[in-house]
Length: 196
Image (cartoon, rainbow, N blue to C red; front, side):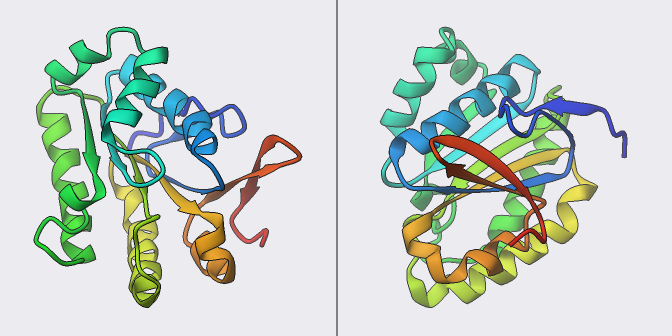
């Protein structure tokens, strides 16, 4: 696959090739906004199809509102179908239950569809705040699958995890992402896989 670098919009990450898989540990709504708003702004500016799957503490209308502050013509992007902002129940559990294999196939279908529609590729972010503890092992298997195959697609992905929920699983989650974003002393820090 072509290795042209993409602007992530995340200062501590910079430019990355398609297939980059990032883990963000956050503690507040501000943490999500600080990372994901410039991430999606860069994707929209660079003709990528963007898909933001949200959960607490940032719901669909809240995500649109914070993105609209930075992307003045957001409504045009939505109308042109260059960005979708969905509640987690519309993506991860739309059949009524969690079927992560179907979620993964859905990402691959979205990538094909985005290319067919003239976009450069697919930029995604999902927040797993809603996930129940008894499903975390399944999630870790899913992240391992994503990490193995994402490099074959024109995708950039940020997976956001509420740190306090995943405190005991930090290493398991982080090991299935190329980069880990954590806030230290008020600044975002990038850790490479294997650091933890």
